[in-house]
Image 1 (cartoon, helix red, strand yellow):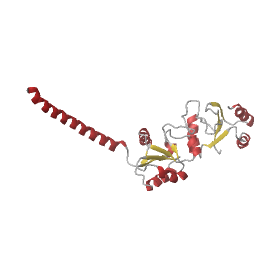
Image 2 (tube, chains in turn red, blue):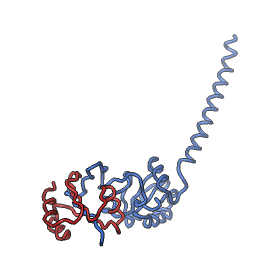
Image 3 (cartoon, chains in turn brown, red):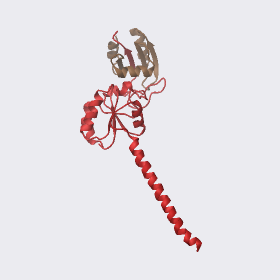
Image 4 (cartoon, one colour):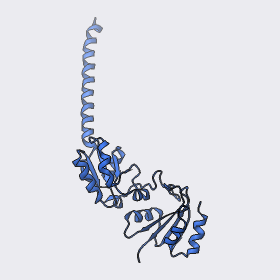
Length: 71
Length: 165
C-alpha cells in the first residue's frame, strides 16, 4: 500500500521507509524520533516540523489525508 | 651606585626566570601534544567524542541516504566507493576518524587511508549504531524537539518504521 502511495505522491512527498530490524540507520532514527512501535508513520513538513504521527496500522485514506495536509 | 650594581643582577634573574618559564611552557605544550590524541586504530565513543571536540576530521563512509537519515554532527559524507578518489586531495598528515553503520565499511576505509599514507586514522568501533552522542539528520542542521532538518529534496517526508513481521 505504501509503495502505491509512494508512486502516487512522487515529486510531492519523499518516502523514507525503514525496516528497523535490518536497517541500523532506521532504528537509530526511530529511536531519535521516539518511535517505539511498528509500524509508525511520521509526517514531516518540508521545513522539518513533524505534522503528524500515526502509531500502528493505518488505512490508505488515513495516510492520504495526512500526506495531502503536508506542506 | 647600589642601584646600578643590583640592576644587572636583577636583569639576569629576570632573564633566568623568563627562560625557566619558557622551558616549562615548552615542556607542557610538548606533553600536551603527546597526550592530546590517542594512538591510531579503533576508538570507542568516549575517545571519538574527544577527537571530535579537538576538531579531528570525521568521515562518514556510508551512502548519502544513510548519512542524511542521521550522522555525527561534524561528519562529512564520503561514501566508501568515492573515498579512494577523494583522499588524493587530503592532507595525509592530519588525523581522520572514519565510521559507518556498524564498523565494517569503516575498517575498509581505514585500510585505504593507511595505505594512502595517512598516519593517524581512527575507526569508530561499532559504527553509528553504537554511537551514543549527538546525531544530526538531513544534510545540514540539527534535529530539535518536534522537528527534523528539512529534507535535502525540499519536499515533505513520510517516514515509515516497520518490520517484516
